[in-house]
Length: 392
Image 1 (spheres, rainbow, N blue to C red):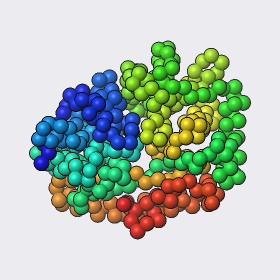
Image 2: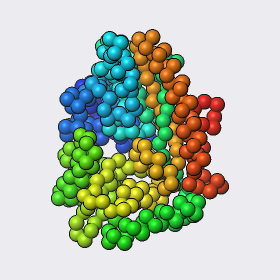
Image 3: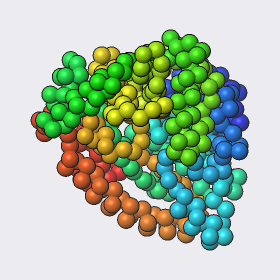
Image 4: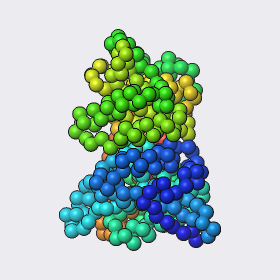
């Protein structure tokens, strides 16, 4: 049987050995990304994040499997909302926090969570998470945004949830205009009008590699990121040193869309890429210009994905408005282990209603596809509605 170990810092685990387990080159579970969050002050007890990473080792000490794991003192920065569960459990006299979370901080991105190359090792990781949850006397354990390769590891004791995101799929488009021909006329016309608004405002928008930005440009990019969070009344968590760290270690895996008005940078959007996918993450602007958000966060990303032959573009969580701009609904998943059986049964009953509501919502989304039916992207039907169950 493999031996489980828990770590309060990713730097205690060899980077190259960890990254060998990341089969699809997903940047968000790379050692560089996760350890960078810890080193540069983005993960803190005061913000509800304490590293508790899991590794499994053979008799010879060799690393066999791993999972990014955290003791969470709240539910901020997860994008899978269990606040109502916490409230119900605490009103019943229980203590919901801390809980155990297998996820990528601040990143609602589907990807590998159980870093292992066989179903048996993925199951061993799940068994170790359950055992640690019970050993520490915690209320629950959660796995957010696992990819399909990890779903078979969960047994019936884990509750299942799903939600919708909006992803863009590449059908081998030659260029942006070729992509537009796949859309219905009204959608195509609207996108062209939005791009024209940005051009008419005298803005120059382009994507650059993160490692091509100088210190002054990174300070502007980070200030724009801070401005967005502060404007919305949220607390920014990513530091300027972390942004620079990503530029240093990710190479062309970090892309930044910049909008220039003359010599001044007035807006930015930050992207990561890996495993044939482009991921949109953060945006900021110092002044409002109609359609600039769509240009930097969506259209620049689509152009980049086409030019570099990427299969998919995931622009971030939420946002039904993405549907009209070439993105289609795709299921995301989470799994939840609640220790108390009575509490688990009550939550399971509530999830039955949630599943039905989410199915109905998915049908509504599909009815408003921006594509001609003959030009639907691959994967557009894999939305949790068409099969016998909304959750594989």
